[in-house]
Amino acid sequence: MYTGKNLLTLDEFRAIEIRNYPSATVELSNLLRDIGLAAKIINGEVNKAGLADIFGEAGSINVQGEEVKKLDLYANDQMIRGLKRGYSCAGIVSEELEEFIVFDDKMSIQSKYIVAFDPLDGSSNIENCISIGTIFGVYQRTTSGTACTADDFKLLGNNMVAAGYIIYGSSTVLVFATTRSINGFTLDPSIGEFYLSHPDIKCPPTGSIYSVNQSNALNYSDGIQQYIQSFQLKNKEKEGVCTLRHVASMVADLHRNLLRGGIFLNPSSPAFPNGKLRLLYECNPWAFIYEVAGGKAITSKGLRVLDVPFTEIHQRTPLFIGSVEMVNELENYL
Ligand code: AHG
Ligand code: MN
Ligand code: MN
Image (cartoon, rainbow, N blue to C red; front, side):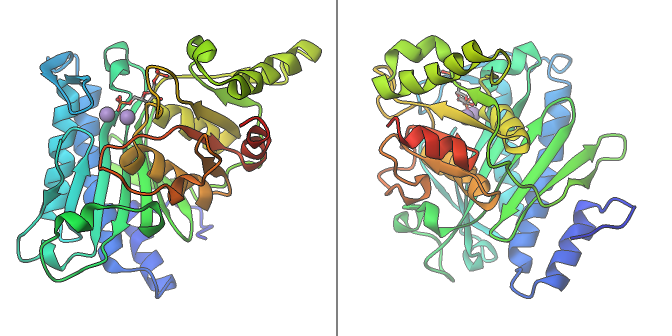
């Protein structure tokens, strides 16, 4: 890990990684650069959303049956453009697109990776100036040298090689996880450069935060209700032992909990029998990140999220994710 006084730029970090770790591939490193560029472009638009008259709905409904915000579409276009013009990505899956896209140009068909992303997460928060984000997961293809086929998009959590997110908050932070480590880069907007600000992130083994949409608690299973109540009981014994924090942008909730320790719950309910969150581009990337950081992510059946079998590109799963000891404790209630 770099310990010098000067902060590394994202590019310097990439160069050092490739030199230090012979297993680090240039292709994956270049993917990080491509996403970093898209992130800067999206960030610019997020910050001036009100001025640019791009608040509000685009007037269409996405494949999940939700209203599409204009910024969702903008972020989606930028992610696709950034990944297509680089040469590390062979195809993509996006929350905003019903079908996957194959990049079938000469360079892209040589690529090893498929990227699944949620271009703008927490988009219902845009108009209120609350933190939103982008989530992405990088999956290794099983084939190579030819354009991807439909089978290549039957993506499995266990085939992920990297994942990350960008949070557009009080500052803009890009966090990138490989199987080796997780590193966070903060954007200096005055010069448009990402600097390594959060080297080698680890998730504390336990914490005091629980994040859940508590207004739905009576729709959750008895076990989950009891688990949520256990926090309130702890506070009854000694006020302030734990705290509820729920932004309703999973990027913001999970970024905070990753750094401070905590648990995030998105259980199933009658309205969302498989939970609200999507496996390929929300749950798997976060499960990958938390596992590399020492945390844990499971479904309501206690199954490791990364082991959930593929059914379709927009499949959902209940998600319980956080500090390892807190998720272990929750397992007693499932
Ligand atoms: P998206 O904006 O991409 O549709 O995702 C929003 C998700 C997630 O970020 C958040 O944690 C969850 O929806 C909030 O749902 P509830 O308000 O029902 O908890
Ligand atoms: Mn989302
Ligand atoms: Mn989204």
